[in-house]
Length: 496
Ligand code: NAD
Image 1: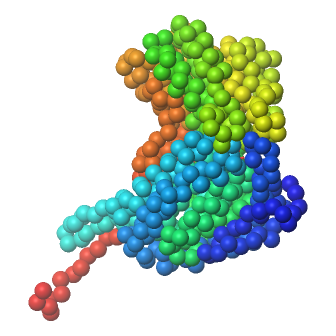
Image 2: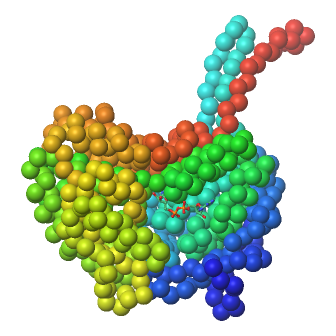
Image 3: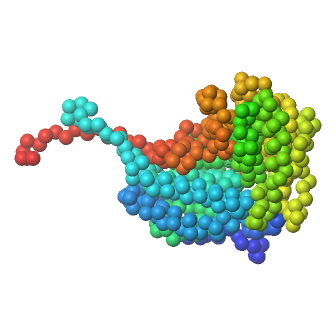
């Protein structure tokens, strides 16, 4: 944490259609994870600054909710167009502050755009239903109305996509919105909000406040915030869910993960290796859907172990903006040290290191937070590595004798974000789909990320709430159902 200096870009807040310099007394350095260079400073905005954003959103709400749905989606059509046009520029900002490769940043933004596209269907998706003559001459209808002010609190690992799991649906359904990005990566949303200045939204419909824990608490405690969407680590998700609940708000809180893949000996090993390598090491393992533990069965123990180690060793690691780089750094030096310590713990607890990414030397990357792909074999079931979310480019291999044993292993995990199976057997796939204890299931898929028109969230400690992000669940989350029961007595004085 530093005191703000005059030379660096200080990230402003966006409140009521204006960029406002924060009066925060504490600021955090925003650092390029590939170079160690400080590129900006984020304010840890005060509760009063958060309250100003909420008040702006609350003032904009009455007029925005009266705006016809068809008119509310017009800015989203413009947003799609602008995001398409500015995709490369935005991806460059994203890579510079987050570290993922330029290709990964562009793919992430595509998923953001897909959510904007789906939210353009709100005039249809938001419709309720009705029935005439629920009793003689009495009609009943269910209509959906927006809630008011909705807020989202998001993590560092998808600074361009995750805000768009929420923002387009919230505003298209007639709510107004306050976003709090991760304090480690505020620049992507700063740029996105600059772009959104040009899409024709009235003042106060979308607001951006930068900050940390105090800003989150201010959102959780403010009586005018009706709905909280959270994505981040499990301890914070649990905390946010509880505090939002105590304050009578609806909440959807996505937490951490520890994702397993089961590899059967009948899997196409070449395809399996390539896909699992991308899942485990893509985005430097900092994906909530990254495969972290591979459970091999039968002969796959040897064939997969050999092929994945070779594939992992061949990945080109470096600055995500450099041509040909396939994996970038992890987010902070603290994160690098945490990942390296966990690898050492695994080794101490009996795992065999097949590929060691610690103390890696990356040309021109001495000051970056690089950990190269790491593969650990024979990780004991009791090791910390089998349960702890590493959130780095580390794949643990464990062996099971059969599907029963492998599924029991998954069952023991406290998390349930994603589970995948690689096989050519339809029967094994069906059993896995039926029994695997996770919210997202991949069959010969490494990152089972649902498309924007399907709901997304995990099970167990990976999610607290009922209504998921994206798709129809988003409409459910951002609207309140109202029931109207009507009777109109016949007026005998009139001829119609
Ligand atoms: P994080 O929990 O540290 O931070 C997430 C957000 O919470 C940030 O905006 C941060 O400012 C805020 N925050 C942090 N500590 C807080 C506290 N004590 N009180 C109140 N607010 C607090 O998560 P992160 O490190 O930014 O992101 C990585 C985590 O997010 C991983 O655990 C990953 O699995 C998870 N994640 C989950 C999903 C999912 O869909 N389930 C998606 C992406 C990331």
